Length: 416
Image 1: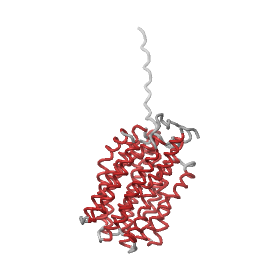
Image 2 (image 1 turned 90 degrees about the vertical axis):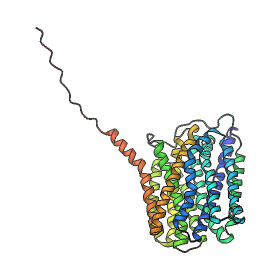
Image 3 (image 1 turned 120 degrees about the vertical axis):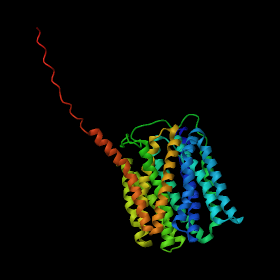
């Protein structure tokens, strides 16, 4: 291996576990807090407000945080995000021990974590763009997205078992340790080499190969952002379905969500096989649309039917999510990658607030079957919009030009 490759390889090996740990830590606290609200007899809307309290500040601050990620050292910013998250996680059990109202402490701690996560999203995208070679970006992106989403889904498994066996307070303290572990991984990545290790490259490894390059960045942002909406609203619906309607314990919720994590691991392997034959745009659209069908079916067959459907849905969704992120990551230049992902995060979180309110209202007035169906319909529509726009543009481009009537040349005047 050439000496110049050593920092690049080290970064790739360490950023994946750091991403998984950070995602796991962020969502353990959120899921544990949702479980506390469900056990207290709260409605889906109360759980939804917890997720909205997390999403709202991120939607407002994400564009500014994206610009910040493009101006300062991204490795340093990542470490600062992890340290701030650890302090916010420790504040929750400290506040409960001091006798503060539980609801106030839960919302305040998760609000602080949300503010830190607002900066983490564009920082992590920027660090990947500057440290990973374009020839390896597609493979690395698959591993990165699986690590992030597996951490998000497995958080319910870890949180469910831990809350049932140990209670919430030790779990929140453990959560602070996950952020410190992530900070150590990123610290070991090392400084960015003086000479850029990543050079622009095109060719067979280009993630946009086989994709309509006329598809605007805005439509790629929409395609990527709706995946975040699905994951967040699904994580709010799942405790209501398993604990509130099916009357199962949090350990069962953890088992169901562990199957979702397994589905994401299968998605990583499937993406490597399918990616050689299909473009990322086609993978993303097909995966999101099929996942919407699975979402409709999940709450209809009890726990026995929910488990395999969550496994299949996570596998489909995982491939679509990897492909949509690869499209967005490859389309943005390095000096603007933070701003692009900042805007994408803002769109995702603003969409989460709106969809959460709609799904929560429908669920509370009926049951989770209609909540899942509503989420599936919104996801399918958002995924189909880029294709519909491209098809309309293609029809306009291929429309034959109207024929202009030919005007015969006037006959020359006879000379006198």
